[in-house]
Length: 568
Length: 49
Ligand code: HEM
Ligand SMILES: [Cu+2]
Image (tube, rainbow over all chains, first blue to last red):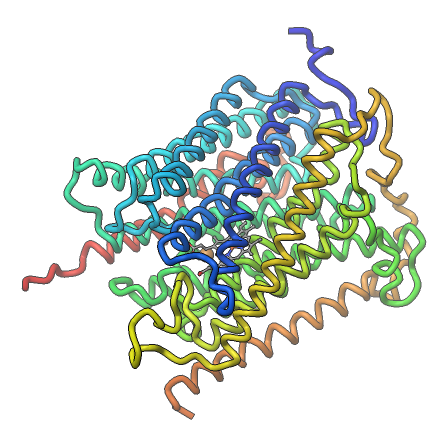
């Protein structure tokens, strides 16, 4: 193998890119976008059906489409993209060659076959409307489980290839000292992924055996316990990945360096140690599990992980503020933020993802993860409201943002429709924030999730159920937001797919022209920034506002709880 | 993993030992979430209708 022809130098970033790794990263990213398209269309259909005035689909189609929506976006879109990020953060960012690209192709092939089989069972055969959670004893088609298992095995092999690349990079000394922070974040994602996927296999393989009649039953309580080790931990892969993307974006576009590498790394370490056990928040009202188990796994330990997220939420904008000030934007509290590149979708998507994840997803997640106040909203629309804040405004938007950077760098194409790209993060964030907020509002008023007929209108006269006008209005507002979000999603897919197919080809050493990589400000510029002794006053103000909102909202929910039983 | 750097702080050594991190990331949730949880579920008495 000729080592020199296997690599090319990126004219934008100076990174040494291993071509076989690059090809594999591209393939996984493209597959991710395809499944986002499928899942997004299904999501729009879900949103339109739960819009009371529209109520688009009949009941059986609704549950079919809802199952397909959950699996395609939450599992296939996100995990294909994460595989791409893992190899990018190892082989590319470390200037290393990738371990066994051929095995990587085989794994991606397995994942693709698995995803297709699963979709075939859900959407074509139509006998697997068991929701993404596929709780036993709901029966799905055999291919449903086979598909998920093949997908999981493929993803697991990718994790081991990633670890292999790290070993190669360290052995060949392609980096000095400790693993750089972004790659370290990817390592954290990989570690969580291994636990996640192993848990998925541990529960889905017996479920397949039960489906084939080889064993008589799978205990529903144990199923739920272990399924959520998979279902929830996979969200923590997402968090570790999108936080890494935030750091990466700050470093690329601002030349920012973490306020304290040590603190950021330690925060990532807390993710490894205590984030996954928060899976227990899905079982807070399950019988059979003790309060000690529930509270230990959700509250006491999980708060350490929440703290870690808040550390990242402070240090990412803080490092951007410090870098901007060092670049000369040092006046007032917010000049650094006002003059940030808001027209560059790489930045705007990242920043909206950060704010949206913290405010919409983070605050509400802590509320829901508290055993007592979980009761107020359990199994209501509040739950999908919350996680469209985390996994859509947070993770999906972060992935969208970095795609705008990867298209020129990896695909060597200029973006088409730059004006559309510029607006896309705002449209998508606005629509999705609406979905998150209105669903949470409706859930607080008691509207159930996964429900085709909340008014029980098909139960015959006199058997209906009344919801307040406010609850129904919130569901209609959700429908409108769903349309806006779908438009934002379509803009993303249009720009990305269009650019990859029809964008102007960039010459071997051509740069894109827009700012892609900014040099770090020299160290001495960091002296004398900020106000008095505070180097990042703007971020401090933002963090203060966040904490006040957090505390208020937390206590409001305790008040809701008190009112539920008229205790006060 | 710089074994030659004996004077590195303890936490730095932990963070640089990727396979130790992998072990921690698997062991903690397996014990506190899965093993503890499964033990509670299987020790529930079976109903005899
Ligand atoms: C056009 C964009 C989207 C719209 C309009 C939308 C809308 C919705 C709505 C209204 C529900 C709740 C349905 C119910 O419980 O009855 C839902 C469920 C869900 N959504 Fe989305 N969504 C979108 C995109 C996404 C994305 C990008 C993700 C993940 C990355 C996602 C993940 C999920 C999941 C996991 C569920 C739960 C499914 C279940 O209960 O089994 N959605 N979506
Ligand atoms: Cu969860």
